[in-house]
Length: 206
Ligand code: AMP
Image 1 (cartoon, rainbow, N blue to C red):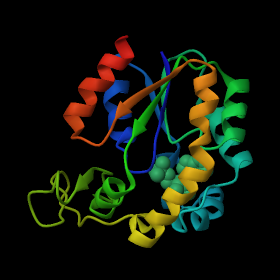
Image 2: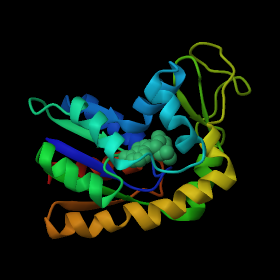
Image 3: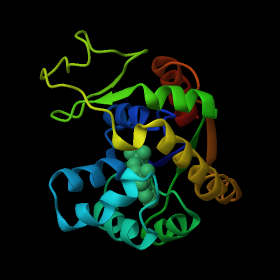
Image 4: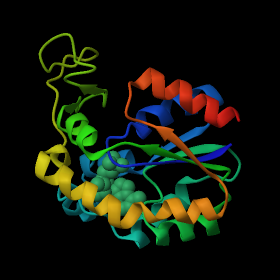
């Protein structure tokens, strides 16, 4: 199975993609995670993409496509989280491989802002928390490795609003792109993680 999970930032597509990858034995590819790792390691690529990410802007298509071309394997099924995000990227992906299904995680802007501004991440083990729906046991300390949790620079409210704006102008047009190919499915992503997961499994087995 070759899947794309598409949706606004904070729609929970990354969390669901990881779960689905495990049960269906798919390669989980999160371009956001790949870029953040490069930044953490202070590589040349990391230094190039850091200003875009911290400002909530999109990294140029050419760079993203170069990275994805190396990551996507034609021998194994995969689930893509955060890619493609523009029509140019979707056209580039068409040249790399065929996709079976695109799942759109539908979620309104108020829910997104609430989720993202409460998201915290462990800088050590990368575990993701939400201070309201999935808080750590100890105040902002990682349950796994006891490291102090951090807020992603691009999860500050001003940057979240900017990311949503860019999502609407650059990424939403992909819905039509994939509708025309008759591979688009939709999931209501505004409820809790387990509920969304059940709906998602139904959509994928249909
Ligand atoms: P994410 O973790 O998916 O929310 O991505 C975090 C940030 O990485 C985005 O706000 C962009 O700056 C950058 N990014 C991730 N995926 C892409 C993409 N497909 N195209 C361009 N920039 C991206």
